[in-house]
Length: 356
Image (cartoon, rainbow, N blue to C red; front, side):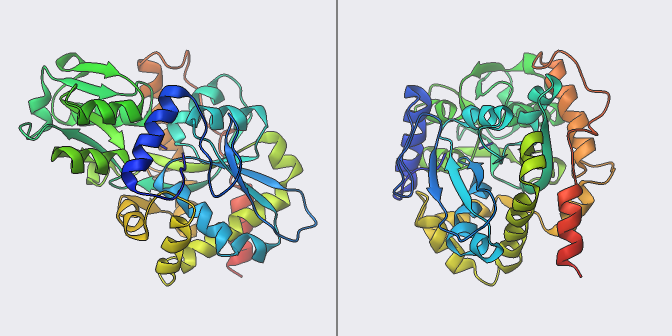
């Protein structure tokens, strides 16, 4: 799932992302200087607490944090937040696990391998679910997933869209033996599809919309379809040290998020404008991208931390994801449980304090 370029057209954004992945260079964002590990925008708040470093990436839901910052929600809570862009998604994950940043917004599937290896990673909130922002696109003469038999399909093996592709094939009565999987990054997969090097690609926004616009290809399936609801959640994750040393500051970050979430519909135009001032999308493009991203409410977060029979339950989803990762050789063992991965304690406090 999930780099934040400078203001401009969506086409430039995709190209920038591709160049980043190919050349391993960092972009500059929001007028800030960049480094190999990421880019940042400092929030000029008056706060007596410690600064919280929040890592974001190129996923529509991550753009929200720009508006949370620019619209003053952090300042309202009195918390100093540095929003740091990781143009390389894996660098963000590594920074979280090594304690170089305090918070990151990964796909749930992408933090399980480190958790299995003993990383002290904690999921403290569900940010959103993909609700159309991930999809399987194919050439215009391919009308259904069943028609992919014998075709070349580009996919980033081990990523969230690998899982999505497997589910699509399974629902169509196919397996990976029925198609030719071509392993490459999401950005390269989009580029390969646009240039006609592959017949189909499982990719996510904004690459998905760009690929369809450029080729007129068919989106055979997407996470908007009911059977994939909750399959690809983006979560707010922290590490054990930050949870201990910056607990009150992280609580304020979460309150700022939910305050922004509550005002989203009523202030959408302002929201989109503030996002576009820092991200390389216009307000209109942001609106389109967010159609495929279901941002979770407080009540929906409360449900996610409970046991359940659907992927909306974090524990249920994690169990399914660990099976997927293990079966594909991406983890050496499956956890007996995920009790130490999920920590709802900050959310529980925020929920109680904001619902008095």
